[in-house]
Image 1 (cartoon, rainbow, N blue to C red):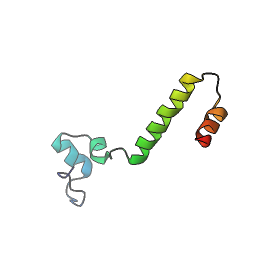
Image 2 (cartoon, one colour; image 1 turned 45 degrees about the vertical axis):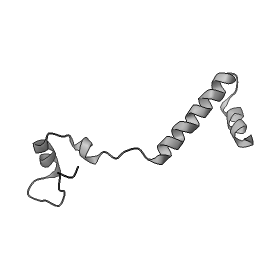
Image 3 (cartoon, one colour; image 1 turned 90 degrees about the vertical axis):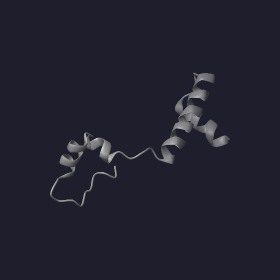
Image 4 (cartoon, one colour; image 1 turned 30 degrees about the horizontal axis):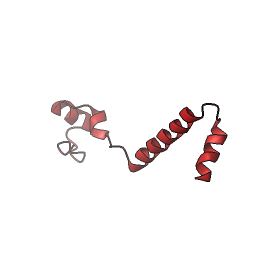
Length: 68
């Protein structure tokens, strides 16, 4: 949000956001990081193992990843 200027002390950030018609959460929002994408990919792989072997517990699934 380039339109909100945090250094401008006359209007608070919340007032600037209100005048622009955006919420403060939109102002403070940061896009997902690469780590989130890696975590998601790991979750997909875990789900694939879980679907293929529904009787595996978390230890065996983890061991399956450590072997690879």
